[in-house]
Length: 556
Image (cartoon, rainbow, N blue to C red; front, side):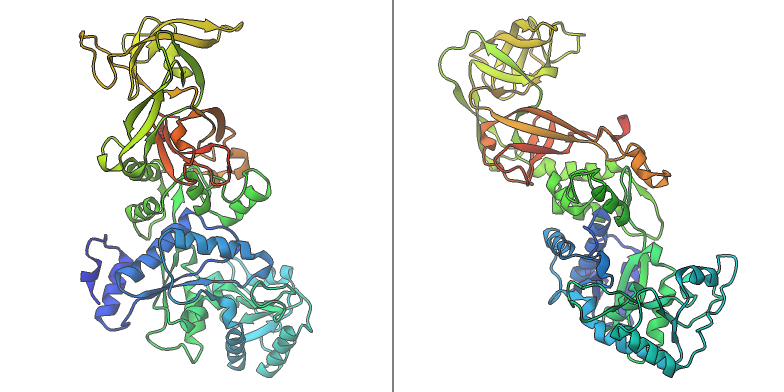
């Protein structure tokens, strides 16, 4: 294994570490893991971690485990387990072997906790929550030893067994590591290893009433699975000291090739939040329609909005891996999505704010016209559109009088070309009692299908349309940023900076060729943007806007 196998991939400090470890034979194979807690849906920040862990395993011909760190049953649910498995598979990755759960190792965790107790490195503490905070100290003041800290190993083994057997109450005591209450690292001030919880676990049922803390279970799970490089985000940097302390003090794992933790910067994205707790709050407070609301940064929300797995993988690679926290612009994400969809999205037409057009000199039934599915990819073939006496165009594409000489849309006594069809000229328009236009009357030139007129007329404007008799009614959801400020985390109340205009709903029409459009597949609605059919719309034609045709983030 060598650097040669990662040619074409951008270098970063993690790849450099792996290259050195393989060259020095510290490890003979790269073995990573993606270890989500099943207490919510994954978001785009997790996608970055998924791409890193699974991508490294692929590049170095190693393995990557999918392991659920399920140590807190009060917040976990099989709904989250199922959604996480679906997200990882949708992104295009395969995990090594069977799915793992930290709960698979609960018996071993208990044995390793007993080993620490026997070594005098762990004790059962009966301080209540308020007393524990007082004894812990602050960043400027050292903590104080618990009065239970010097109890004997035999006494602690007995008490820990009582915790396990349900003889002690929830909240009455915890098992703590005996490290250093004067440490400058708060995570080393005798952290909790186990607590009592009378909760039914989604994997183990009611077998256990004590559950290990994440920091204790995580490192041991890595070691049991022979993980070589344990990758996590920077907020766990101090916790690496506890990770190392646990493994260094257990006989089975105190060896050179045990796992080591390395931290990288998390993804921070403008105009959204990445805290799972805050995302939970948005869902629980009914501020969004659910975890898969297309405004949410969750992978399921982005998928429902029409983002592709390939684009998210490309985005993860473009932003790269570093040790410096930064804010990623939403324009960068949308540029990646736009670049991807521009190449693969079929073209079609939709009218979202329709106004009727009557072609007064058109006779007979509507006619069929062949239009390209993709103007730059002939291999995608043709699609059938229609032209007839009555059409719909977008209300914004008509003005009674052209506002200036650069106006290239339809106006009275002005000609435009209808996309992939004929040149038309507006001659008059009807209005309602409020002065709103209701119908536009036009004439068309039957000699102008697919070509410029022979009489030398110059027609610059091109607008889209849908023939009325075959048009399919549709609902369009236009999504904007979820929050009104760039970094909502800085607000005292992040809910107070929600963008009240983050969703606009319009009703109009689409081409009949979309009758059997695929859910989650993005189409380019010409001149409007990229849209995909909603995956929960059933027989109703509901389309979510994936991304606009050009960046609008810096212009609002």
